[in-house]
Length: 393
Ligand code: FDA
Image (cartoon, rainbow, N blue to C red; front, side):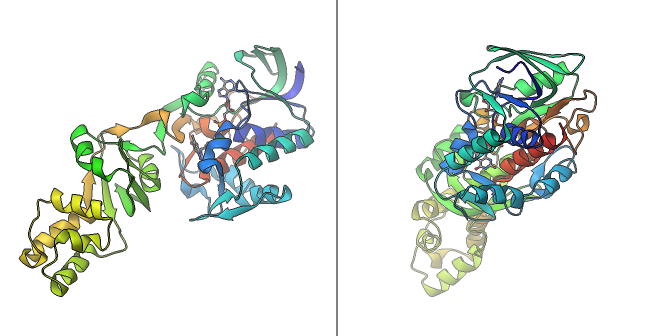
């Protein structure tokens, strides 16, 4: 391992590799260290293996942070168009799936190969399988002790991600290091994660496992319209993952199934057209049959449509489109796509990601208290914050 360089990057994920590329292209000598056997493991598994690498609509409004303004500078200086230009230079085919989300046509591995090629061109030296045992401040910068010996540099960029998916090597290293250097770390919690339900409710929805429907899910003033998926553990699907980042333990979410359809009006029309049909049949024209049956049984409604007063139909419609659910919890870091909270942005310079109180020390990517919605926003933050640090070291 090269003993002295201008820059050491810890973490060869999305943010760390981008920082190494930018710093290397600016003529800095860069060493990048990772304890994993392969770089960019989360990129590899992302987007169902196709990597939702950015979102063309990405802007500060798509991120959660105690300081919603913090990300603006970095996001403006490395945009989705900048990343798309890199992807195009490497001849990687991509497509927009939905809502501005861009995916590789073939494989997320194309993005990893691209970043590795860019790192080679930038002269960054990648060391995998390298455990970090200590980081110290020296007179001229930082000294990092590792299982492969030690190295020194004037700048240290920490890009070790959050706590999500510990099975993939997530460690919380960045938070400990921030604390070592006196930086505040805000409470962390799992984000973009399926929500779980109490055993009683779970048992009643068990027959629905595997059903996906268009839905709007609300928590307070925040709402997302995407798919809702019933699972054996509770509720999942993009709409649920999105709202999970806003939901807090003990809180409620309000589910509206098929929000673009006026269910009450549909039921009233169905009653007029064919009063002899059952409410299950009428609802089953719009919803999957098992779900229609569940919703009717939950309201304890029986008889034909003709037997049901309009107020009962309205109650049934409200059960479909105004269903208040109190999740018992979330699936936690085991399956969360991201970690909310993290290194307090108040401690960092928003232009460079440098710690205000520790010149030469930078934090980027998921470990910082900036968390994107589902849909390519988190990678855009990784690229943008990585670029910002690489530009300034
Ligand atoms: P990241 O976690 O990518 O990299 C951290 C690196 O640091 C890793 O290589 C790790 O091995 C290394 N490291 C950790 N601790 C260390 C230590 N102590 N010593 C040395 N090295 C250490 N986002 C998105 O925008 N689109 C998508 O499609 C998806 N899909 C997706 C699917 C799944 C299943 C998950 C879990 C997550 C996503 N995400 C996503 C989120 C996205 O993966 C995430 O936001 C970024 O990978 C964060 O990039 P970072 O570089 O900050 O951390």
